[in-house]
Amino acid sequence: MVGLLVGFTVTLLSASSFLGVYSYRRLVKALSSRASELPQASRLASRVGQLRLSHSRAMAAVDLGLWTETSKENEPRIELLQSGEPTFQGQENRTATESSLINDEMQLPATSDSSFLQQISETGAALQDYCQELTAGELDEQPFGDRSHERDIARRIASELKAIWQLAQEAVTSKQRVSKQTSSDLVDEQLVKLTSIGSHLDTLAVLSAKLPTFLQSRMHDLAHEVRGRYRTLIITTWAAAIAAVLLLAGLGVLTYSWVFRPLRHLGHGSRRIAGGDFGYRIHLDTCDEMAELGQALNDMTTRFQEIRDDLDHQVQLRTKEVIRSEQLASVGFLAAGVAHEINNPLASIAMCAESLESRIGNDVDAVASRYIQLIQSEAFRCKGITEKLLDFSRVGEVRRQVTALGALTHDVVDMLQHVGRFAQKTVTIFDGPDVLVMANPQEMKQVILNLLVNALDSIDEAGEVELTVKRDGDEARLVLTDNGCGMTEEVLQNLFEPFFTSRASKKGTGLGLSIAHRIITDHDGRIEVKSNGPGCGAMFSVILPVASITSQSLEKREEQVVAEQNKVSSREKKRAHHAA
Image 1 (cartoon, rainbow, N blue to C red):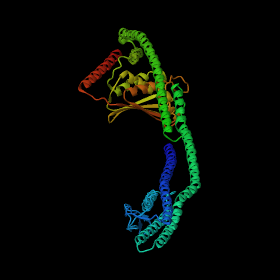
Image 2: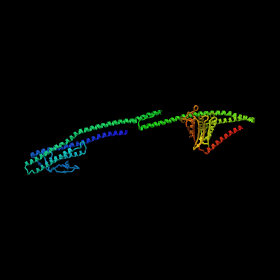
Image 3: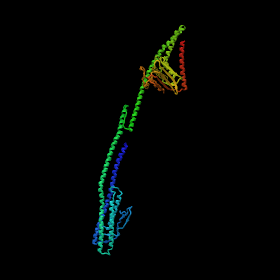
Image 4: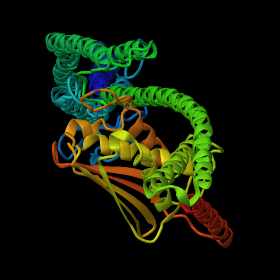
């Protein structure tokens, strides 16, 4: 749009300027052409005047008898076009019939400046020059291109010159017959010829005097015509100038509206965003590149705001996880101390029961023997519980290794079965061949514990939790299903948010599932949750990549399995020995 306005303005100004310049050029050329005709017309009139003066002197000479004879020279050469237009020898592109008008020359008296025939010849030359100017001027167009009247007068002048030439020739012929005629007859005849020449000269003078009047009349008419034209041209020029100014003003307004105002708005919005007002958005009412730039800045601000909010959320999440980890570490340290302090009394109880059993021997009745064995069995069971508590509280090195997911699940379930609030709830494990994953055992125990505690808290006394460990292609799946209270859509959306809990008692910290989600994500896995709504239970699926087993890792895993089996066997032997 701006380019079209600029182009139209330039075109309008250029057209107005060229129109004025070319009109002025045309007028100047026409005036110059006409001005060059004036000297030729004046020269022709002057020659005609000289002819009349010579004619009057010739008349006087005849009256006084001063008539002499001279030789022939300076014969004027006048031609006529077949169309009747006068022209002269030497002009191209014209067909002419040359006729000799004078064969003899008349010599005027000695008092004359030049001969009469010479003056006729000069008059013909002046007419020839004037006709050449007319021919050159006819190549121009209006306002001065029409020269039909001048050419008509020029033809009549040529005819008069021809008639004068013929009369002069007849006068010479009669002069040659002077010996055969009387002097009075000759004078009368010459007077008749000269009188006829005089009448033609008068006509010639009138015609030559008309030539400048045509140009003067045309100039007078041109004054009115040109006045109207230049007034129109002035009005057109002013209109073009005003239109150009209006167009330039409109162009300035559009430039401000389309360029400068959006740029100021963009600069203001950029400064606000740079100052920290990330909620500010740039709104432009144009539909051009400036609006696209503003939208790009808005998109960039939105993306930056999302990244900032996500980073803030991650920082808050990591901070809460660190706090939770510190809390768990403190609990683990406390549990280790408590387990150590409990193990000593338990060892004393077991030892005392064993000594009492050996001292009593076979004399004790069956009831006392059964109670002693029960004391020993429960003491060793309590010791096993404290050992598992110690094993869970040990963080160790954060290093991943080939881990049997099913074995870890059994260990966690065995530990929770001794917790009083979960003793009456049923936990069922459906496992087949064990699935090996590359994981940190302590972190995986923490994940399974958090999921299992969450499931047990959601069911009532008659509820049941089912655990399934299986392999699905290149993935290991730990599926935990309960028939508890279920979850709403809001709970599903915020399930892994830190400090979010749906327990009615609000006793939970809300960090268990968040930490479990972070641990599984760090292990390149994922947790999927499904629930059909409140009262329909829930299903948690922990999905981890299956470990790629090498010979060394397989041998190491076999050693771990053998060590665990030996540990279990030693415990069973001790229990059997004490029972015996």
